[in-house]
Length: 224
Image (cartoon, rainbow, N blue to C red; front, side):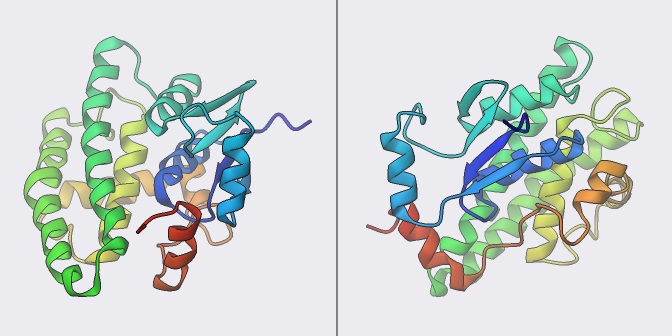
């Protein structure tokens, strides 16, 4: 049996994408088992492998892990993406928690009704450029290193890059006022494992398309 982690989710970003990013950054190959129908999810739920009846679920090291943050913490700790001591880990956690908040905002855009999309996008841009990005710009300035925490790559760098690239999909010049974030983006994108993940043909997922939305809604029984 393969020793690779196995990811159970639908064939899209959602809450699994940050896990894919972390594994890829760590240079870990992984397999994916895609949920294609509502029945696929129900089958998984009935099998008793989903602790809280929810995906993402990752099979790794003999465990069937659920809860995105717990999975991320485990992968970061296992593959040395979690700082060198408790204080660095605390900083990484703070930075990552805010990135997750921003990710959630970005993720929910696709679920907005057509007449609310413009207003929702304005809210994303406002929060990103006034609440989140200025903090990371200042952290990079004050820390004076290539990375957000310490002097080595951590999950905070990986997940911030993921969020920056996602935000640019919504507004291509969203980083215009943040020169340090721009250079951070270029620098972290060039880390060999991440560079590979950003190439076409990798397991990185594209943005959720309008046409795929009904399928995803059906799998997770949303909108009922």
